[in-house]
Amino acid sequence: MDFYLNNFCRLSEARNSVKESRAIFLGVPYDWSTIDRPGSRYGPLHIRKSFEQFLGYDSTSGKDLYESLLPCDLGDIAVVPGDYTETQKRTEETLEKILSENSTAFIIGLGGEHSVTHSFLKTLKKVHKDMLVVSFDAHPDLKEDYMGNKETNVTYLRRACDFIDPSAISLVGIRDADRDEIDYAKKNKISILHTKNIKEDLEASLSSFKKAINGKKVYVTIDIDVLDTAIAPGTSSPSPGGLNMAEMKAFLDICIPQAVGMDVVEVSPPFDTGEITSFTAAKLIYYALSLKA
Ligand SMILES: [Mn+2]
Image (cartoon, rainbow, N blue to C red; front, side, top):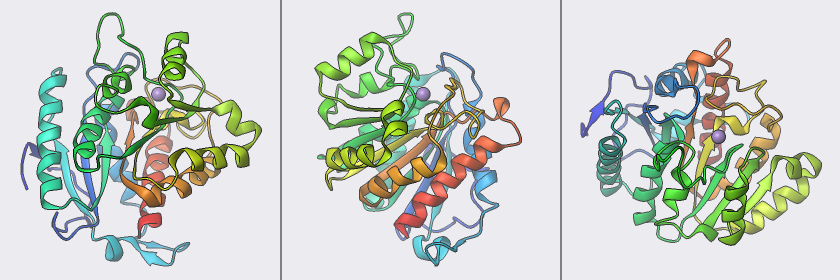
């Protein structure tokens, strides 16, 4: 498996084959169309570095993630600096190859800016046709364009609406949006849970979220900026006043058991402090894997 891959950095204990693995990691270190602070090209490297410090044995579930999931880390896509289209093509072709060898493994994408999610959605949607999309993000990323550019980290989900029915999308943690994005979401029946709703009544928010995804297959994308800036400062567009880990985990408890894949994007190590953001991102992945083990 060496299709467009640059595998100098892989988790040391995730060296199982694509065929036997139940959890496959793939990094996409692309950040050339970020509209704000760049640096998420270093996300996959730092998230892995933090992940390495956690033990395989999960004391909560009593399972060993490495034994139970036989993870496979394929390294990173050899992205083409500044060329989103070619990077997308490489990501999609690689994912197609992975899924043709193993269509049931849980896919874990490491970003990179949020636009890399587009390729995961596009490829997984072909295999899981009735898949819903859950986006944890302070922003809807539903802009038609940004200064004329249609392919950026704030427009990617609008582009995904070309091949995903918008009513299959749930946005969780919204607190910074344009009027146009909210209008588009309402008109196209995209469900929205604002951070304010979650902070005011967590139980009611969890139960409406549960109802929205209703036991169906989901793809989960996590923009790290959905979390509070205190626990995730290293990101391109921080928005203080976000979710804490307990709130985030309560949502993951609901959606990860039925997820076919997930990604964590927008971790920008140059803007991080004491590697807090990388450790937070790694912990979210670790928690999701413990729910899959
Ligand atoms: Mn965001």
